[in-house]
Image (cartoon, rainbow, N blue to C red; front, side, top):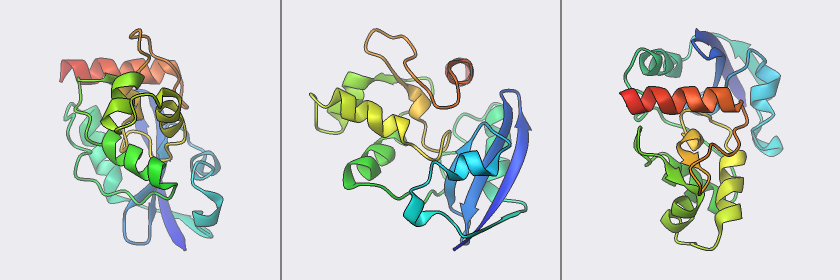
Length: 164
């Protein structure tokens, strides 16, 4: 499989988007390292050829950073994981900007109220940061919890969405 990547500058630092051969986002994150972003994709589904270019999804990221909190909603993703991960990532895409859930609420949204750790694991393994907004899930006490790209970025995203 071939893929295309583009790195853009954001107020939170460089952001790299990797899309498959039909333009669907397969990985993304706040890094200028394509290898770091691709490493989040399941090994069996990593592209064999990755080239730099322009990806349509990058313009949605720019619109998001310009204040359109819903700019990412229509961007298509293609993710590979377990059935539970895929269901979780789809559920994350339904969380509205400015209305974060806590891990318990997220677990309930997945119809597994006692599976709080599994819900957290789904967030931690998300390969398409921002497009699959795992940053919108907080600890039950309201604190940030973890975020693969750093808590400063998570807080920045939440603040931006609260203002939108």
